[in-house]
Image (cartoon, rainbow, N blue to C red):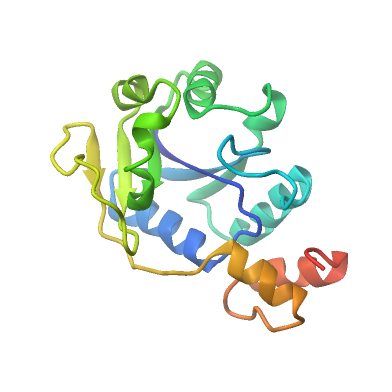
Amino acid sequence: MKIGLFFGSFNPIHVGHLIIANTMATTTDLEQVWFVVSPQNPFKKSASLLHEFDRFDMVQRAIADNASLKATDVEFHMPKPSYTIDTLIRIQEKYPQHSFKLIMGEDNLSQFPKWKNYEQILEYTGLYVYPRPNAAEHGYKHHPAVTFVEAPLLDISATFLRNHIKKGKSIRYMVPEAVEQLIRLKKFYL
């Protein structure tokens, strides 16, 4: 099976993430998309992160009704911070019967050469890239290991959602109903 790996903090998961994952699963040769919930992104501060198990729970609730989408906690069992190349190797070792592609937003391409072993990532899995507003120049438009996938441009961020929650404002329609209920129930981000 050919599987797309969509890495992120998902703090919280929102409709933008879901639309990208579903677009990848339904318009490309990918048979599934797995959300790789990252305990700690090496480029982000961990202080604003909800506990990894809570974020994983939100992702599972968000995708429960879609057989093409799965969540994996593979990085929870790895040294922190985990680097994408190490996770890709771990996943391939764990699931040798599958092939994998890394899904990434175009806004990450300008920073991609700063990633640990980025050339190896290109060789190992290649990239499926979705457009992002105001993406910087990157030089990967014609790279043979990079496939650009047409997807809706949604400029919604988890930071915006967390700020909305802190101010007591509605996040309805920006996150799945099951995620909104969990956020309210557990008083996340307050």
